[in-house]
Structures are given as structure tokens and as C-alpha cells.
Image (cartoon, rainbow, N blue to C red):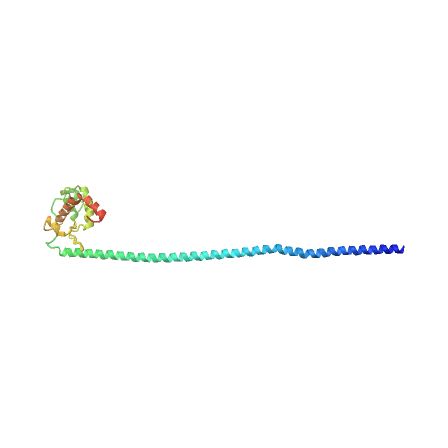
Length: 238
């Protein structure tokens, strides 16, 4: 009997030790799983951290690019403003030069007319005493004389518009006008002026003499005053 109980005790002890060993193994296994799970969690978090860092870096790059672009645009705008200001200054200087040149030319013309007035030889201006058609009454001075003589020369009154523009451009209807560079003279700007002597020796002071010569020149070369005006428009002279 004693031996039987001894065997039972030994077996019970063995079983107990076995159970304790299994339980200890389970605990040990659980302890090992904790570090493994912790390591896996760390590996899962690391990509998220890296992505956030990358996004922040990209945002910084974009912000820097936008700031650079704004600076570049501001610099371009400032440069354009400076160039526009400089161009405006040059334009003003050029305008002043043009105005000064025109003023000098006008002054020279007036001086030349004054000289012509004082050195026109043959006495004072000869007044026109011929008939004046009713259609020419709206004009005065040398224009009235020109209109009257043009109709006497056989041209229609409609032609006077062209004749008026032509001789306004040439001399301003000034019978003492002289071109200082070419020597052209009188209302029709005959070149040389003494050509008009074919119509009268008073060609220097008689507007009618100049106009008669000018109408004859126009008729022989261009047929009509409008023909002469068209040629002047095309090339600048007649």
C-alpha cells in the first residue's frame, strides 16, 4: 500500500511540474510577443512620420517658389515703369524740339516776307481793277483776283477749290513770297520768278500778272487746276 501511494505521489508531482512548465512557457511566449508587437507598431508609424516630413518640405518649396515669383513680378513691374518714364521723357524732349523748329521756320518765313516787302522794286502792289464775277464775291484780296481771272481763262468755278488749295500750299497767295533756297517767286512760285515777265514787266508787284502766268502754266501742263492739284498731292510739287 505504501509503495502504491509513493508511485501516485511521484506521478502527481511530475504532472504538477509539467503543468508549471507549460504555464511558464505560455508566460514567456506572451512576454516575447510584447516586444514583437511594439516593434511592428513602430515600423507602422515610421512611414507616416516620413510622409509628414516630405509634405512639409514640399509646402516649404512651394512657398519659396511663390515668394520668388512675386519678387520677380515686382522687379519686372518696376523695370517697366522706369522704361515707360524714360520713354515719356524722350517724347517730351522730341516734342519740344519739333515745336522749336516750327517756331524758327515761321520766324524765318516772316523775316523773308518782310525782306521781300522792303525790296520788291517797282513800287507798291498793283491793285486789281478788272471785273469780279458774282460767284467770286465770297473771296477777297488775291483770292478774289485769282477766282475772277480763272473764270476769264475759261475754267469752271468748281476748279477754284483746287486752285485755292494749290496756291495756298505754294505761297499762301502772297504775291511777294520768295523761296530763299530755290528762288521761286510769287503766288504760283514761278522758278525762276522772271518767267512771269511774259505776262508783264510788273510781275514782281502785280498779283494779276502772276496769276495770269500761273493759269497759263497750269493749262499747258496739267489742263486744269484740279489736274495740277492732284499732281501736287502725289509728288509734292506741280
